[in-house]
Image (cartoon, rainbow, N blue to C red):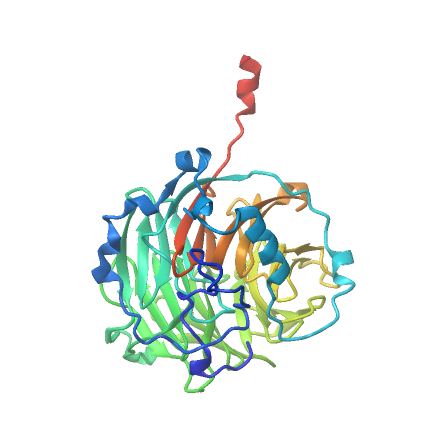
Length: 450
């Protein structure tokens, strides 16, 4: 990403508009709005999640009876929902690093049949709400099961149980983080008041990256942290993305992509650095292929790279995007790579033929900042910075889609590993929340009974 000083970033809990009073909060470009970090924000552990206010939540039954899924009281506001949506679409300005002509982009984009319903709204809670540190980084929500969701809220990494509808603090990064001494060769360091910029949770391991190049690893079944360090002393070394993956031998590894144009690979067993790769530009995102052999490298370039995951050697150059990329995801079969870009598109690439993308999928308003596949490969979801999440049916060759229309900055999206749930984290001063959608199943065998 472009270099920003610390004071140029902000916790975006104070969102760019307030749904309770449109007149006082004009529509602003959140993607380009930058202020100071609010140092007053701290752990929400003491808040006890306001459990005495369940009325702020919305159930599927309430939604079917006409309640807005986010609990926005449109009947008491100056705008109708449709009018507000219309105005947002007209006035929203997408953030760009490269101002290139995009006249031909629309012709490339696939014609998609919208209006499908693959995932139904299930529940929305405002007892937990996401916090965004940097407006370009949105990997701040992860589901490890349909009953376990992890998100960043101020200086706390929280766990939310959709089953119990309760939250708890898993890690407080405002307090000093002291790693154990059992990995002396891993260059562990004590950290304090970390501003979490990105995170990932998988294989019972939580990994968080910080604004000053911090890397924190925690085993979810153990107290304290397993490892913490600053991967670089570079002033512009913000950790843009972390990935928990398996290498070609099956060992669990952690990759960290940083703004100092480096990708570092750590063994998740002893936290030794086992790989250190340099690239021509700041690296905004990396993901490892399902077989552990390939590394997708995206950053401050219109091109995306495909590299050998063990050596870092560049094997291919993916050309087609018009701006910087910040999101990627692999189809479970390992043959399709999806890349999300600030040019408002997601491109799909067949790694067997990198000469051109398979297809181009376009959003409604802004950059594509998060991309996810279901574990069975049936659906792919992509999220814009605000307001829209798109779910594509891969079996229709991405020609059929569901559009989730909401209001607020999107901190992250995550399918549960069993594909049964999709979670969306919303960062907003008033209506910040966690939305849950459940996979719709069609029981065609019942038709023969009638």
